[in-house]
Image 1 (spheres, rainbow, N blue to C red):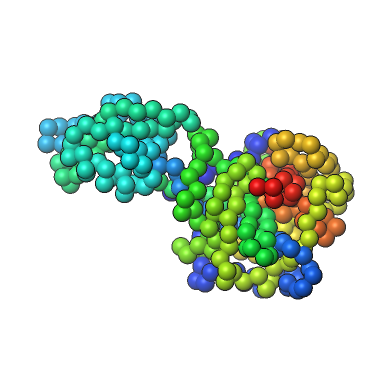
Image 2: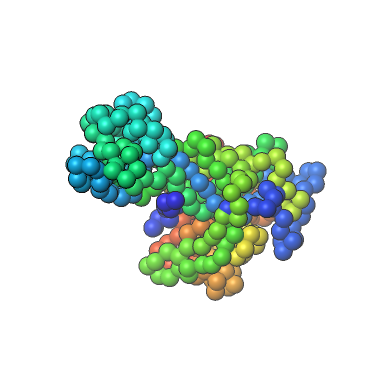
Length: 337
């Protein structure tokens, strides 16, 4: 699967429940808030919006070598979204459409850099398999990791990332059949000045713990499974940007294994009017986190920010010239969506 670009600017379970004995946090109780604090690293698998071309190839036919896709100008990075007007979402659907053609010319709809165009293509019959092909290597899903920010207690609706999600071409993504998996962090590429670091993680299992339903400029949203174990999750109230102040705060993030930990930060600036989801400037002050990661790294986006016992926002970006500093989005902006 192709990796999602969970973009930073300035730049998979034996059981479906999470049980983290290494994290001692307050269990849910009446009156302790409306939102569970996230901080767990999750693997997201989203539809690519069609059959994405990750390479071009030749087709060996009885008559010789053919390259149908290359001949009509298809490029790596293009997304095949329809054949003869029929929507294509998966590799299987593309193969079925090519077989139906029986080698006759079809109309192919291709999306490139947000623009869609149509042209004719004649599939070639491969000598070895007898199947009709157009000479492309295809992927239909995109994957990446990020951090869950919150889960609403009553509805189990969640929000994550705190910023938009794009592929390498900055194209929007299909959200149908999108899944969310628990992810175990197995390593960290440490952030340094001028280069963003990143978490390295593995999907624990092919059984999802939640379903993603919307991708917006303020994050990825969906619903957790009802049998998710919240007995070790801390529930808190939320606070609007008007209650956020310059000073000490904490973030919850996972930089090793599956269990979120709490790390100290300082809020250096609060800007409730920012239109780019950069409502906070934060600085990592926790020496342990700096030692392990260098500061904020890719995969930590969505890490919840807690101040005075309330959820006020989420980490979204890292400063490339100083990985200990970055931006955050206000929780009210995430909840608006």
